[in-house]
Image (cartoon, rainbow over the protein chains, first blue to last red):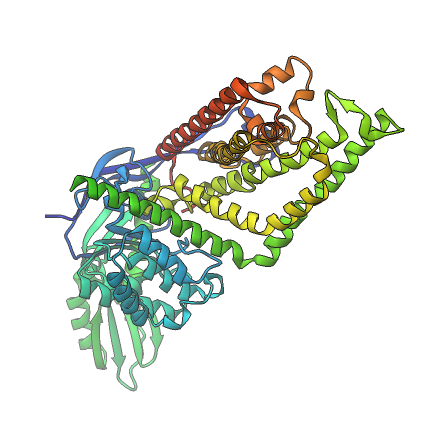
Length: 332
Length: 286
């Protein structure tokens, strides 16, 4: 039984088309042209309890809009969704007590007060039992190592510390479902890794269901078993992270370590040379040609070592997004 | 069983409101220097206003300005009236409420209130109660001092208990009226995103028609009748007029009932605009 079920969910906005220049601005006072933007176009998917799912897609793909729909912040244009049996946009108080939304660029803590005071208010708002509150707060602050920062006004915290506090605020009431919208945006590598480790540990421990959007592939590869690719508001892929490479990458990378006196001359006929740093050479080869190319290279060149690898995930995703946007622009 | 669950819910709701008041008070006191200075500065216009009316009455009767009258108001009555409107406005004015609601919508901060099990309007209402409490704590001393210095202007002395009770009730109701009225303006932000011009027009009308600038019974016909039917007279003129005994008996009862009706009207109106706005809301600000 899915904890999140989305069927043919659609959300379109009407956006004012402002043209450039003063004359157009004046004209816009009297006559306005609107364009309908379809942010989400008929997405359907189900999420099982305890899954950690990543939403991937280029900017404006519809990821955040989908999270907003699921958290009940906006109404859909059509379609249906159910989270833990609730229709999100009915904003039932019981539903709101059982999920949390964390947006990397938005603040839910009181800016001028220590986070501790916001947490106390959360305890009251979510009607968290005092013992549960104390236990949760102590667990979360020690996992995120922020015990000493609880008394410091939020405005004086660094971005990474603030995000940790945001996560604590979101998890104090032990939600069953957590929506994370780019939780590591703008953070340095160490803060990113801390938050990844925390999320991984917390999710494994509590078995809560998490939907994450992120532009950082490291977030996704560290945390999520399942990846949903959305582009132009349409679901493009739903499966494992490694499956993306199988499905969307038509090539492999052959890493060669040539013999001492061996020249790399002529290797370009086998595929695109990605890097030459003799004696090492990387060649991108169409997937179906790999065994033939390997055999030919081994027959004609002195090779000390060879490895066949998948192309980097970032590259596959980038080319996937590129091809999607190209095909859409051609279609329109 | 049902009764005790209801009671628990009721207790929880009030405990939450109290917690919001406490947290908002703590936030207000975080910038105590700026807040105290801002509060005290609001007393400065009293001096200019008293000098202005002195100049007006002096031009009427240069020998003895205190003996002149404008529509039944002597100089002392005018000062007493002005001080009382200051008290009324200390309850009904809502600095920054509309613009902060519109900003919350425009920046997308409103999402925070939509995902938490909390009602935005109720949250803002109780935060505003906290702001007012902090304001009174700072302003009480200066208020007492000003009233003490001007005690000679209150020629009829303290009003009777019933009038005093109605005065206090009118202040509390004017707080609610001011809150829901400005909340309605702020919630227009769902459609307009920027409400500063709308707010400017409202403030302009409010300044003249709430009785803040001069007593509304100075207005010539038909404006006095029109103003009498508008809700904004309850924001400054009405509490002062009640204290000064200008509205009594049946007229007082009718006006109090009208004030309650306006509070209910703007409460429902703000709920309606909020509900409509949410349907329209597309989650601006990412």
